[in-house]
Length: 408
Length: 152
Image (tube, rainbow over all chains, first blue to last red):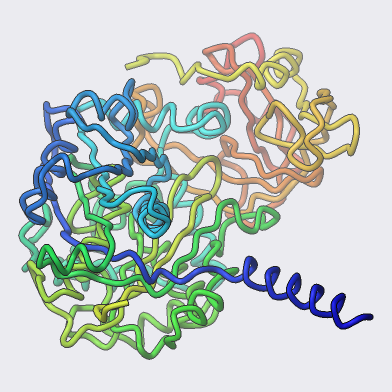
């Protein structure tokens, strides 16, 4: 090879190496966590909750409405509208718009999309919003028509909804890995303890193990306190460049690394692991932190079995060791493994897609010293995980992000 | 509320299952190109993306891998009938199916046979019965109540 050819080859090689490497999130931060207080039922539409969330973002940041040029929206109850209709409904003129129908993974995915848009200069300030209402019959409609597979092959079988789907996963997990109801109960009770000081939690009465074990059955082995309580509400945050946040005097959180994965492990006969298991090594390597440096974890927790699966698949313990991990740790904000520090969905409530944002807004508050409830002492690094969309027999969307209070 | 009928909405992709169930047969979608058997029914092969699919008879043999008893249903049709047993079955021909589970089936894991019948909304549904049980095992059970009488 001539010198010229070699130099050309080396340039090509370098370029390939450069394009293959994932860019870091150095030019985008998360700021201004907003929660629109939850209510069990509401006569308002999802648009109302989205409007309240956007108002909260503007009040919290001091930005004018015209300063928003991007919107990431998630909602199950905005139909027949999408994010598009919301722009006209709320008088927003945007140059970047995303509608993310990924339920419990919506927050992580919104963060990823918005951060890249800001980093690339396609938008300057992106509002990430998840808003849903809850009317007497709206949940039944959402569940009955959730997906083609649900309609054809799940709902006609007892119409138990996600409770039944998670009951199947839970029963299998218990049989396979020896989990006891007490293990799930410990997570639920710790979350309730966290929720008792969190003003937005709908469930703040103390929960004992006896309460948990003796609750009425919903879909065995699940009883009442294993299941999220559906409600109405919204969660939101802003994504912008770090210097913009600094100029506005906003406390911000930086993104160390993220992942998302859809329909991972399709050959598994039943879901005992999620996409996190494929990506956790890269997630931690890119963040440059180890598991020991994660000060708290926010999992997606519509049912406790899925929290155990996230703890395992994110690498905090090996597959199947979740039950022993639960026995070895305490999960309150001041515990040995602070987890779902606002109470999680199991105590705060599940406001539709906002359930996929709950861990993120709570992590932003913990990392910026603006907690509404119990604080994790000296929290510097957080892992937030999302999980969504039981399309048939398993959740298809997985995501995670490692966040830091330090500037990027 | 749908009152005294089970949920009736199905996609057009599902019609072949209902047509076979009306004849008392279990048929599942199969790919003409790669022979993959799939469920729930789709518009294309999940393995090779071929849209050349046909419905092929299946024995229904498989293993109940997980089960639950639903105490809280979103449909009054089930709610008014007390609790309801459903499960996931791994079929020998490949797919995982959700089915009504007959009371005589042992707790998971248990070998079962999956059959297809019409329910009272005249839609195909899958039912798991004990491996060696005759179809007549459904007679007089709560499962028979939800099926079209002519086909039980």
